[in-house]
Length: 112
Image 1 (cartoon, helix red, strand yellow):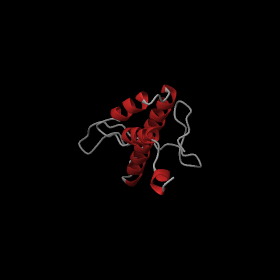
Image 2: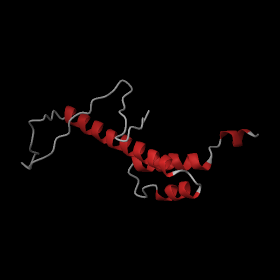
Image 3: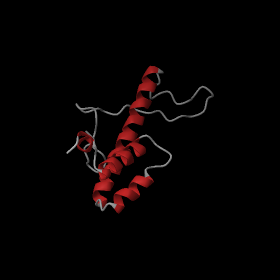
Image 4: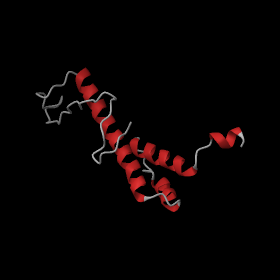
C-alpha cells in the first residue's frame, strides 16, 4: 500500500466527520449532503443518529460555556434581569463540568 492510500480515511468516516462538524458549527447546509451519502453507503440509522446526537450536544454545550464565560466577564449575575435598554433578558447559568470537560448527550452518548 502506498503512503497516500494509508493516510486516507474511508469515505463514510469523512462523511460522518463532515456531518458532525457541520452540525456543531451551525453550517447553513446542515450536513444534508453527508446525511444522504451515509444513508446511500448503508450506514445504519442508529449510527447516524449517534453522530447527530453527539454533534448537537457539543454545539449546545459550547454555546452554554461561551454564554457562561461572557456572563462572568461581563459580571452578569442571576439577579440581572434587564439589558442596557431595560428589556427583560434570559441569563445563562454555567454548566457543571465533569473532569474531562464534557457531559454525556441526553441520549447517553459520550462526546469524548
